[in-house]
Amino acid sequence: MQIPGLEDHVFPPGTIILLTARPGTGKSAFAKKFCIEGLRANQRVIAALTDVTADTFSKQIGVETSDLHVLDFLREKPNGVNEISIRIHDLIRKTPTHSVRLIIDSLSTLGTMFNPQLLAPWLLDQRAKLSKSSVNVMALVIYATGINPPSITRSLHTFSDVVLEMRTDETKEEPERQFRVLKARDISHSVKWIPFVVSDTGINFAV
Image 1 (cartoon, rainbow, N blue to C red):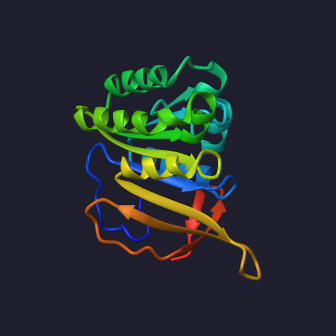
Image 2: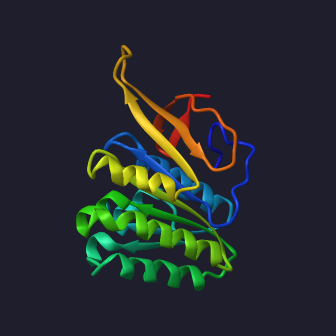
Image 3: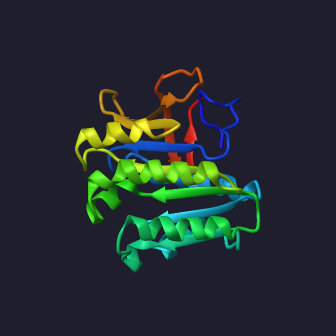
């Protein structure tokens, strides 16, 4: 998808995009747009969910297609992060196309389900697996800040290729949702905060 500040950049296979913000800022709406744009581009979308059910997510997307495969870990109660990894990569290996968008929503919930200290090593493992995959995969990982210690957030930044941030600016007359690119590995970019609004299709940037 087109990310303000990185519009002209084509992400290489295996790119991990980490989206961070406090709860209720608009992360899931961004994931919705990421999913819809992938389906419109005839890509396979795999959504590994821990915050909402598969039924809820599919209803939000509003598209019935075999190109969308949802792993409902909220209902299925996996035994650990390794089980989640196995399920995700089994699907990637079996994909009939060579271009996949992976959504993990959310990593912070995995920390509360298991152990937050496992999150950074698990993300590093996902990055290694995606880089070796024969399938072109771009992953969007959602992470709610303020739930786990700040040190966990910093460690996740280290293993992500792109780090996006969202916030709500309460200093304005009307609170304003804002977005920026905090980090993009080996890419020059602006860290300017950009206003956005949540819409039926996900989010719209005021650019």
